[in-house]
Amino acid sequence: MSATAQASELIFPRPVPPAAGEMVDIAPGIRWLRMALPFQLDHVNIYLIEDGDGWAAVDTGVSDLRTRTVWQEAIRDKLGGKPLTRLILTHFHPDHLGLAGWMTETMGLPLWMTPVEYAAAQQARANLNDEGRAQQRRFYESHGLAQDTIDAAMGRGSAYMRMTTGLPDTYEKLVAGESLTIGGRRFAILTGGGHAPDQAMLLCREEGLFLAADQILARISPNIGVWPNDPLADPLGAYLTSLKALRSSVPDDVFAMPAHNLPFYGLHTRITALETHHEARCNDILAACTGPRTTSEVLPVLFPRLLDAHQIGFAFGEVLAHINHLVGLGSMVAETDAAGVIRFART
Image (cartoon, rainbow, N blue to C red; front, side, top):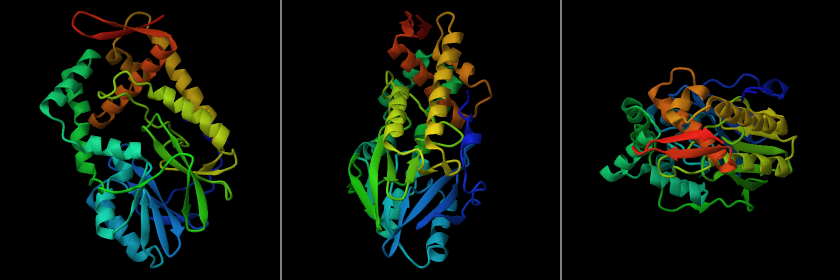
């Protein structure tokens, strides 16, 4: 079953999204701002929550002139003359915190973020030295990638710098299990791994509102990837654990407001579809590995289409995440040859 399966069973109160740069009311006291992205996934959903005499912003979009202009126009014309009060970041990816430095500095906003995501953002923006880049290249070479593919995958580091504006030196911590009051609402703070190390989500139990970030999307699965700085990680295991926890802690009848795709009802149905999707991808890999295979050789099994430079690193990371998970389950085993190339075979 694909990640798009069961979408027909979900309920979309607003089946047509606002145009890029436009804002609509999506729930009482919550506005939905659709920001354009320069990728195949061409948008990110920003939510503004009424916060006393202003609005708390959840995420920012990437750092580019278009996104800055949208924010300036929104503050001037679309928020009823009320200012932004604070900035809440769900995780460290550039489509979510790209303008954090600019917004906190120019607007004087306090920043709220989980400590793990704050540290991940700082690490991602740190300039890699020659030794670090060499280590990255060896990682990709060990999995059988061609040099031009490696060059494309490694280009993500400089892209992150271009699409973000840094973070302030101080911030307020979002901690799982605690709560955050925004305006008259009390939101429980939830976090989950897999897509990002400790992504924040917000749940208002009293009103059945769930800001799901990238953890639960209506029509696609978030990218679950392994990266050179943690080559043996099992982010898929972390993601599946998070899905199980969300099913038990978040009611099925909440209104889910994700960071991509459409807001929807049917949370538990969607969780089941995502679990089934990743199980199917694992089974596809096992079926393809009739003999030892490098990650590069397995890549077309999950991604048969032509990938652009932006997509290749994410696709590689996704394939290795499923392989690492299968190794952890004992369903596959890794073998390293004399040249340092790693191949995987089913047990």
